[in-house]
Length: 476
Image (cartoon, helix red, strand yellow):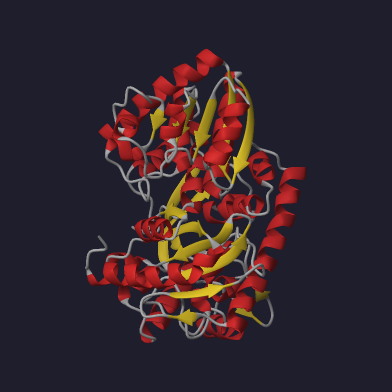
């Protein structure tokens, strides 16, 4: 066990003692896959420990939500996958709260330091020298807290699903740091296995040609977005699709058949100019949930996280957490229907962007969807837009959509751009603030909200800011 893990575990034990003393908790979590798995982990943990709890999900934790929570007089609040940006509010208002988050803390030094006396119930990797962008997710922090409350090592599978949903494996092509320690615990508990495999989405449930057709990370030149080309590729490779048997699922192939497709795919992409580094991303470390049925979304960590995202992004996070906690009846059926709707909306959203076009500036590219794309999925559409002809792989994609609070901004980048110096978390945080909004996130994916009248100014400032990052110039 690493020193950092031990330090976070010690902090978690302090928080666990406070939870046990109160015996009643109100849990507040985020609506994405990481937040939903965080809530699922804590919900299972509380039930096992006999701790009474209620829960809710929020799209964004701001002072308006905090004022409402304060007025409700909860004995103890536990925040998962959010909260570290509002420690000052908690201290100033004497809130009895515990925060299990992985986003970079914001606040006065005395409140967000590692050994803060004013707010000691704060579990966050950044306090202990680890990076919450790729070393541990919100669900991983929740897992450490859950293990401090009892024998909950088997909940590591949910922590892995949350980490994958939060794209924690993108930077290195696998889970590293504290995530790897949690993964090893899951392996020891018999709930997770992992190893190199095709790194594209859909191995449990999609026909192989669909896996290729919808691949956006990595983008497969000549295949992504072209169904017929994907079918021809498999026919030429002699595996995965033929007139007699039709389309096969990846899990239906034996080892030699899988190797044959991967080898052909890497050669195909290399022949078409994909860098060896990008071609290498076709094979990644993949994660299987051993307690789940083969051929279902829950068997694969990536597909499970997508299922949970579908529930949260359509205001049904409670359905997602019920699935996390073991409901394989009505909740799973509802989640499946939401996933169908989600996929339909993604297709419609991508078609909207394709038909209306993407605006190209010197350092960024963007689209504005108004109310045509739901603000909770505009970030996914931004990521998928790399499959559209004419889109640059050398610029981040920025998606804008109408929301209740203003204009929702979602940005997506690539590892190549990060290696060149781009950090979308810093860009979104600082540029939204310049125009009177708020933002943040991770280096490869970040978001924010700005006033509607500030869109043109925001886009112009962001283009300059990203240009400075990519050229190594200061934005100060």
